[in-house]
Image (tube, rainbow, N blue to C red; front, side, top):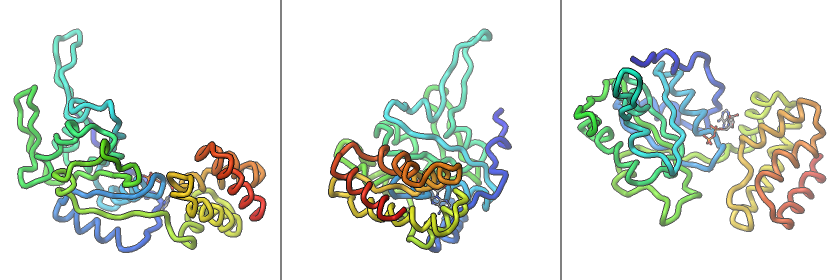
Length: 266
Ligand code: ADP
């Protein structure tokens, strides 16, 4: 039997709300509606879900989805050990049986034939058939399914089926507005407010380049990295290069534009 206490979020995570998402999520949870959080990478989706799990006092089981993931990785499989074959529940089954919030991060990375296993859990049935085991798991009343999804990666090959999308209430996330992002950097990286504001300014320049040579702007996560490096004594220019420029592009022109913004700011 899995010990759910290891999935409890013990300490209140710092989460800076951007709107009414906390009360809206709580409403969705009260009715156990499946929820989708959409937005670019590193903009606070996972932090939000962690915060909600803490606030609702539910264990949180997170699965980072990838294209090699099979349905068995979610629902479970038979394993051979010294005692013979033994069924091991996958993370989705554990969450459904025991009443956790199951968070499938970047669900669009998983193949569509993997994603369909969530269908029966996300409608009136609230049940998960374990075909190989011949068992129907009825979801615990506290179970909720949450998925995250980055619409920027959307392509014909990689998108959720419409029949999957139509099972979720959804939230649109974006990089926080400058004042809020500044506060986040102060809290998360420990930098003084004026340094946080300078980093946010560089983030703003990069985000304007989206679609003009950059697939995605600089994430809040990367701004936090730059702040942490600066707090650790790295010069702001080096920190920005390491955290904000080199990871996101190899294009010489874009690098030059960002470099210019860094020199002008620090
Ligand atoms: P993703 O959208 O990829 O799930 P995360 O939730 O992991 O992104 O956010 C990346 C980092 O950015 C977090 O670890 C946190 O430091 C910071 N962050 C982004 N948004 C917020 C927010 N609203 N409140 C607090 N921290 C945030």
